[in-house]
Every structure is written in structure tokens, then in C-alpha cells.
Amino acid sequence: MAPQRGITHSMTTAGLNLIQQALSIYDSDLRLAVCNARFREMFNLPDHLVTRGADFAQTIRFLAERGEYGEIDDVDAYVQDKVDQALAFEPHYVERQRANGRWVSIEGSPLPDGGWVTVYTDITQAKQQENLLRGKSEELSDQLLLHAEELSATNRKLEATVTALEEAKRQLIDSEARTRLTTEMMPAHIAHVGPDRLYTYSNRRLSAVMPDRPSNIVGTHIRDTLGEDAYLKIRPHLDAAFSGTPSVFEFNDQLSTRRIRVAFTPDAETLDGRGVYILSMDITEEAQTRAALQQTRRRELAAQMTSGLAHDFSNLLTIILGMQSKMERLTLPPDAHELVEATLAAARRGGTLLNRIADVTGHRAPKLETVTMGRILKDLQMLARPALPKDIKLCIKDDISDIDMLLDPGMLQDALLNLILNARDACQGVGTITLHASLVKNTWVQITVQDTGCGFTKEALARGLDPFFTTKGSEGSGLGLAMVYDSTKLLGGEVRLANMDTGAQITLRLPLRHPRQDATPGLVLLIEDNPELRGIIRDMLTQLSHTVIEAASVDEALALLEHVPDISVILSDIFLEGETTGVDLMKMLPPDCAHSFLMTSLPANDPLFVKGSAMAPVLAKPFTAEQLSAFLQTRRAS
Image (cartoon, rainbow, N blue to C red; front, side, top):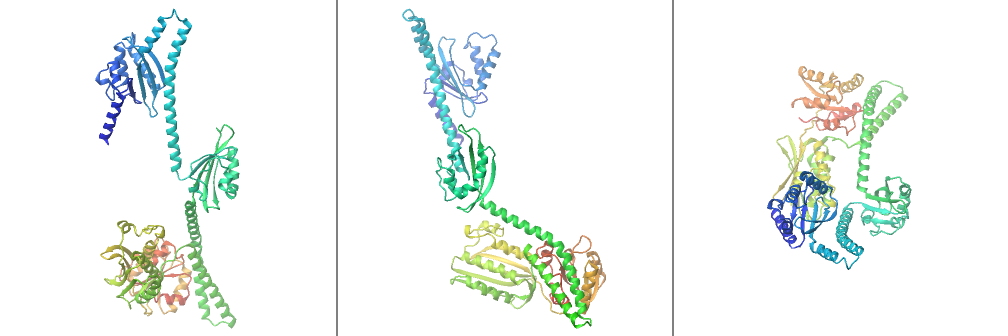
């Protein structure tokens, strides 16, 4: 770019050298930007004063000391006065006689971006003609001579004024063009209406903001342009703006189904009455996002309000269920059994209500149950086949078909179905999708889904698991892989993306948890901070022929685990005495520890519930002795 600028400067200088007047341009710091050869010749200036960057004050001093301006008593004061006049950047026109006897006119004008341009014209010949005219004064009256001289000087000033006006006109035209271009590029409708409600200006963006409206609307009435329905909605605010009150408001445009934000600003400078400036923007997406965030916040507030109440209420229901179970074993009148059963039914309905509240306020946590991979994949195949074209083949290889394991089958099937449908889209109607289930070092359940499509792009490999990232354009939501990632993480696993020779591959790894169906009674460590509730659960366990030792905090539980041998089952509430939770206890247990379980009254979307469910089976309160017995059949991974 530097050589190009040099060429441009040389061409400009060459062009200026062709004109007959002397010309100089100084920047806002009064440094020489450019001058022509005539400027140097007219004033016989040395090289350093006609070089770019030469100081204006030094040039004036040089000319003053050489006598260009006649006899000067104080050169410093004269130079400073000239500098002050130049810094004022006021247009001017003067004529003066030089020391060599020749006459020169000096016309100066400021530049739009700062700086100063001056044109020097030798008017000696014109002055000589004036003197010749004066010499014939015997033939002309003094008044006629004076008028001729004034007319000549006035014509020269008029010519300078016309030049300045033309430059001002050009600047105004350029400014108006830049302003209009700016307003046309803005994603908003900008307009002005006069007191008669007719548009006096518009940037032709109305149809982009409010579809089905015209673009060329200058001279039309706002009611006719917007339509009766929209006009009635904005009219109170428009009337207020005409009265001098600005406003910003939103409304739903029925014709375009868009959400529009409008700003009315009074124009007090309108000559024939007050006008109004209008700024309109389409905020449909913003409004939708705002509504979604508000709904999310409502759900969060609901979860916060209900979680504390649910905790205490579920503990009470558990106590009620335990007490009623005791009463069932007593010898009671026939009518009493019906009352006990009704009480149990009411308590169970209360537990169901708590679960429904949890479903409303958040997503569910994993629900581990004993299943085989063969059963999961068989059901998955039935779901996936109808969604695949006839030219796409689904191959399933199951190396762990009959192994019992603890998984959430619904959550896993949803994730795998999502991956199969993504693979289908990648194959574009023809290809093979391969699903392979296997074990890794007897620690992980690994499931790979591979397709013969085009594979992942570099960006997709890096961001494919991010919410809302998609390579499908408007056809994709960007939530498929993100949901797979979330559900896999909830189950304690991980997701990996890769490209193979034949396409893309996604690998899920889930912790291998072995169930144990042996219900042989053993020693149970019960950890619960509520003494009354702890007694009820202890009675339930003893009814199941278990021996029970109790603790109220994590510290007590760890001490018992260290000193009491043969503990076969750990059953802990999530909330305990102190700052340490039952989830923290699960993290502290050694790998070869007793089978561990959690119980809680927290909603399923609570972070502690989610963390705990990824580490151990979680029993939701309230529960009965039968439900506890069935739950303890599900053993923690060994």
C-alpha cells in the first residue's frame, strides 16, 4: 500500500503543477501537506520550506524577514498573528502588493477533515488595467472610476464565494449520501412523519422489519402504510410524541406475526409544527428468547420453593408409611384395617404428587435398573428400523448380550436412537450404520456407532457436543449430540467423537455396574440425621431380617466402617448432620467397600440427586418396607 500512496502523491503533484496559480495545503497542525511548483516560484522559497511537513510559521518568518510584507517592526508578533489567523480556519479573500511591486490575491478555505488550502493568483495585469483606467480619469468621472474599481474587486470576491459555495454543496451531497447509506444498512426502519401523519423520510427498511408492508412510503399516511390494526396499537404513543413526550414500546404486529419495538422521538424543529422521528426494530427472536429464559427462571424458582418443602414432607410421609405398616401387623378391629389401608393409599398419593412436582420443575435423574444389553438393543432396533430408508443398513453387534448390569434403559435408548438418526442423515440415503456393544477391561460398557457418511468436519469434531451447534443449517436444532452428552454424563460416562476411514464414529462409555440379586440378610449401616425417621427405617430393615447399626453424620459412618467388620450394606440419606453429604460419603468409600445406596426427598433435578444417582442407586422418599426391600435387590457396582 505504501508504494501505491507514493504513486498517488506524485500524480497529484504533477497535476497541480499544470495550473497557473500557486497552491499550498497545510494540515490541522499547520504542516505542509502538498504544494505545486508555482508556489515555490512565486515566492522563491528554499527546498526545506516546500517539502512535506514544512512548518507554516517558519515559512511566514522567512517571507517576513525577506521583506515580502514590507517594513515590520516586530517580526515575532507578526508571525504569531499570522499563525493565529491560520488556526482560526476562517475562509478569506485579500489582495496585496508584494515587495517586488506585483499584485497577488490570496483566497483561503478550510478543508472538511481539518487543514487549510490557499490559492495565490497574480492579478498584476488586472491592477494595471485599473491604473490605466485611473490614468484616463480626465475622461471619466471620479465616481465612475470608483465604481469600476469596486466592481472589479467585488467580482473577484464573488468568484471566490461561488467556489466556496460549490465546495460546501459538494460536502453536503457527500454527507447526505453517507447518511442515507448508513441508515439503509441498519437492521431497523428509520422514518420521520410530519404533523399531517405523512412520511417525510424513510430508509426503505420497513418491509424488512414488518413484512407485507411497502418500502417506498415517503408521502403516504402512516395509517395507510401500517394498516388499521397496527396503527390503532401505536396511535396513543404517536399522539403523545406529537405532544412532546418520547416513548419506547413493543407490540405484536398481527399481519406479519412479528414482535416490534418502536421508539418515537419528537422533532421540535419542524417549521410547520411538531414532527416525530420513528425507529422500529423486529425483536421477535429476542422476545422468544426472553420468554424461554423467563420460563426457565420460573421453573428454577418453583424448584427452589418446592425442594425444601418436599424434603420435610417426604420425611413425614415415610414416617406415616412406617407407622401404618406397624399397625397392619397388630390385631385390630376389621374397620381399622380399612382405615390403615386408606392412610397408606393417601401417603402413597402424596409421594406421587412430590414426583410430579419434580417432573414439572426439572429433568429426571437416571433411574438405574437391572437390564441386559440384548434387551436394550432389541427394543432399539424395533424403534430405529422404521426411521431408516431401505438403502441404509443397520448392523448391530452385541458382545455383552446376556450380562446383567445396572443402567437406565430409557435414557440409553434415547441417546443411541439420536446417534442412529444423525448417522442416517450423514449417509444421505445410502450406506451402513454399525452399532457395536462391548466391555472395556471389565470396567466400562462401550457402545460405538459408526456410519459410512462424509464424517465430521474439523469444527464439528471440536464443537459437536456444544448445545445449538449444527452443520445442518436451518434443518438442525444443534441439540442432538448435546443431549447424548448430557445423558451420558448423568450416567457417569463419557462421549468421544472421531473420524474413521469410512465415516464418523461416536463412542459412548458407561460405568459397568453389576447387580446382585442375593437378598441374604446382613449388617446394614444406616445413616440418617432425623432420629424419628431413622427409627422407622431401622424397623423396616429389621423386618427384612437385617442387623442395623446407625449413624447421623459422615464422620460417624466412616468411624463405624473402620472399626466394625462385616458391614454388607450402606444406606445413607443425602442430607446429614454437618456440611458433608451422603454424596460426599460415596466418593470417600474404598472400591471394595460394602454395597452402597442413597435415599433422599430431593427432587430428581436437584444437582445433589443427579450427582448421587451417577454413583449409587437412589431411593426416593417416602417409601414403604416393601419398596425398600425391592430397592435393596439392586446392588451397587462391585
